[in-house]
Image 1: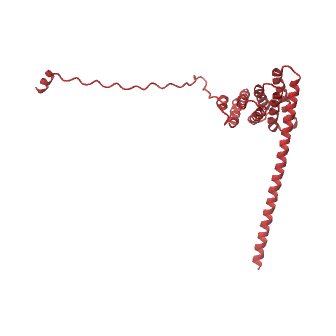
Image 2: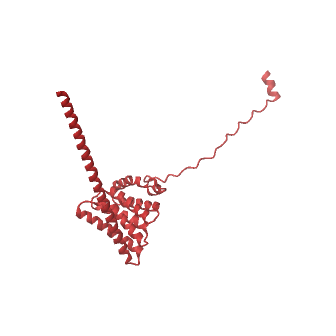
Length: 242
């Protein structure tokens, strides 16, 4: 009887422990959901703020094309300064800021392709200046402008091409390590987008060597047949018998 009581108590404790674990898992799940919803709301607010700010600024000028680049540069700088003052948030906010910029330019009929490239360049250079992870910022920036391009009806492939190219170009002003990190980070972005990977990441020729060109195959040649042996002359046959 005593042994059965011990077994029952052990089972009860195990069940209670499993119940506690279940409650803990549920609590974490619900907390994460609330946090993610909060992050989504924050990102949506940033997109809306940047979009409206850019569009309003460009509505006041007749030179939308020229002012778009200036406004883009100032907005990117402002966003980076904000994260500097707070001490965090650059990686989180970059996608929303770049998305808002492109959408704002699109709202006033600006050149979203050129602005997409300029925006990504500014984000990468700004990340380098504040010591942030350049490759992660590049990835978030490219994701943001591609999403914006799709929403404003721009050519997604062209946006992706110039965005990735802009990120790699900006990384090139930082150093070879930055270029390598950015290229590796962005490979996944261009996968599945037709013609983007080849255009954004062209094969590089080693320094000092001429470009490699394909050598056309030489036409197939048929070996000439060997000449037939000449028939023996009668005199030769007589000498052979002697």
